[in-house]
Image 1 (cartoon, helix red, strand yellow):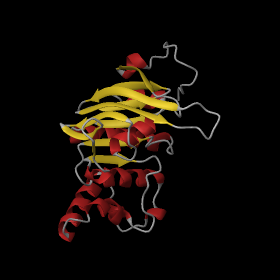
Image 2: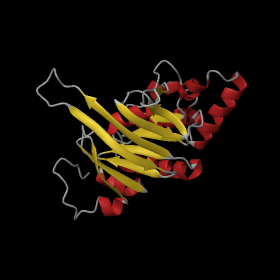
Image 3: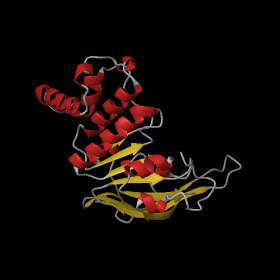
Length: 240
């Protein structure tokens, strides 16, 4: 279980925009939870805080009893010590490495044979076996997304974070990879926290949805209730 309660103020003194504050509190069990809201509402910043790429001003983040961040106890684990897998919106693959090397990058401390075995397991799981020797510059967007997921899973994380993982994909490929993600959630039996601003994606994927606007949680509920077309939400929200 992920337990989050944090506050973070972003200083915008060099612009004409007022300071922005992220102030949220929620829990995620072994389920697929979608963070849904308009661009700039704080969704990606929240993922970065959980992953350790952004330090909250105060609060706590606890994963399966392990404190990742606790301002009162002066705990702030660095990203590499957090048992978290993170799939970035841009995938953030290493262009100078091939597919196998990208997947195995987090496993460099393992012996070569162990690393190769783990890479083969993940490649089989995500149907990447024919691509292992291929440069990432020569694979499709959908293949790159699966490589990014495989790399995020390499170290057996206790939670998987995904930031707009399907935003660059269209049509059948988007649907296929959404189904892959749902299959992974069932098999992994860990929390998945996914950011989107697409109502259709939230309805398709989520066990629960967290509706966020202007840095605050508006509501948490099942997506069919929270995102029903009859809901009178702010015009800030996308309905794609």
